[in-house]
Each structure stands twice: as structure tokens, then as C-alpha cells.
Image 1 (cartoon, protein in one colour):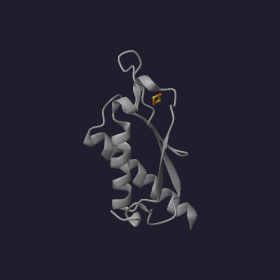
Image 2: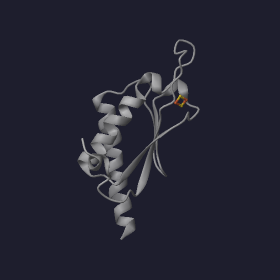
Image 3: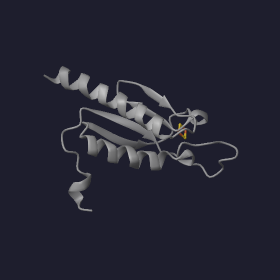
Image 4: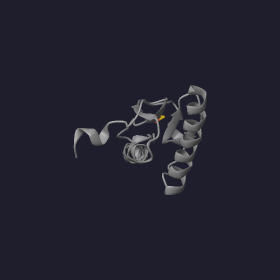
Length: 110
Ligand code: FES
């Protein structure tokens, strides 16, 4: 892999923030990182590049919604609480929302 493989193909128009906080005491208090958000972040980043979406994925700290994580927030848009479900259908749901948001923001940019 070269450095350019991970360079965004265009200027991002908005951010997608994902909580990657991981706690060690999963039996007492779940965390997004403990429920697969780090792997989800990697997967989403690959899809963003593949689809050339103008979205910057930002890995961030706890969003105070740990019981329902992994949690993601589109800047100025939808909030996703996946409740431990990082299935393909949930990933597609997020991607579809990002595509809609990208289309909307590209129109607003003109
Ligand atoms: S650990 Fe993700 S919201 Fe708290």
C-alpha cells in the first residue's frame, strides 16, 4: 500500500465521526470499541474511498451513549446507534445516508 491509497480523492464536504473508545471491563460497561467500532471505522474508510464520497471519517472519543454503541454522527446530520449490530445491512444504511448527504451538500456548494 502506498501513502496515496489513503488520500481522499477530493476535498471533504463534511465529517463522519465514529466513537472508537474501548473499555477493558466490557462485562460491566460496554464501549463502542469493544463492539467493533474500530473495525467498522476501517471498513467505512475503505468504502468512502472506493465510492469517492467527500466525507472525512474521524475516529473520536466517547459520545456518552455507550449502551447503544457503536455510535456514529454525520456532521450536521443523522446519528446512528447500532446497538452492537455492525452487519452489512447497517453498514449499507450508513453508506446510503452518506451518499444522500453528499448529494445534498454538493448541490449546496454550487
Ligand atoms: S464508548 Fe462509544 S459512546 Fe461511549
